[in-house]
Image (tube, rainbow, N blue to C red; front, side, top):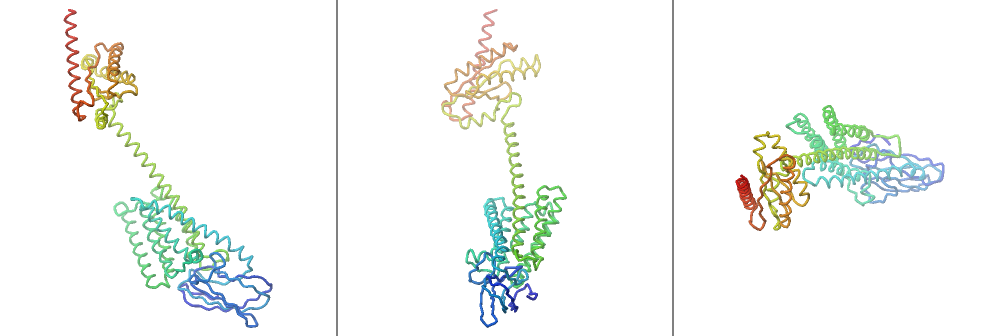
Length: 484
């Protein structure tokens, strides 16, 4: 067939076929499947004609998956073939070829099955990332899903998948989604690499220029539909250039995600460059549409890996931040000297104080004496030993807190009050046995039922603790008087 302009039109081709063997033959187009309608009229030497119709707009059933092949049972002889083409545009040069049906099937069945598989892969990736993109803050995934969706629409229409599998013959504006997907891709790159007006003003301005060009191409394509595929082809070249520039720049800055992205866009650039530049192929097996589908599928898989890497990195960063937050929270609620929960921790626990709970305030005796006569290091050792000995005795049955200075507190069940007091007394004896003569702790006990608020409970416990301290001091002084 003569060179056909890609901007579409009606064309007629006349050729002679010489058949040497009786067989079933399949007549089809190579290079492209983007043909709105066609008809083949095969005439024998005795004037008998066989006419078949097809095309993306045709409701005639296609006997072969994703191809325009038409079968003829032919005997040896010479035939005149007249082919009529009518399409608003062509992706590549439609060229006729004929092959025996077994040879034809061996050539195209694998490529057609592969195309269906790749469409399924794209559909799966689209569904996955549009589901993620529906959540707030996932613009990158949303734009990526829209990019895939635009390619799915075009490839499904251009390959005839919608016509054969869904009886949908919409075709005229099927390449418009490609231009929209190109714009979504630019937005995807911006969000993936963090391009904004503040940190990367030049790349941000470049992206706006690319948006404007792609929008102009879309408007021109809608005004002149015969040029739509040419506009889409140009748009692919533009967003490829934009992606390579951004990927190269951020890779130079040692941006790990950008380095993976640059690999993906480079592979897509090689495969996509073939599909948008080639008009004729040396093989009957593949078409330009299928080559483009391979490029998009490979790109989608590679970008899915890039996004998976980024999501994993963000997840790791989140986990690290949570650990740091937990560590910060733990530090805020922990006494540094004794590693016990502090006053803030106690106040938080008191907000949900059970009705059967009991609060015991403790005030150590003679801490100032040890600090003044032996130094603060000895005083700190006294505090640490007291907290260590008492905490070991309480175990999991009660919780010990350090409120600050020489003050401590215990939270326990009201049935365990006497047991806790006994552990405090035993700890006092253990301290004295370890050389801290005169060490001890005064106690103030309050039950949850005695007040309505945690502040009141703590106030009562504090008051009773100091009353106990005075009582112990008076008793100690009386003993000394009697002994003298």
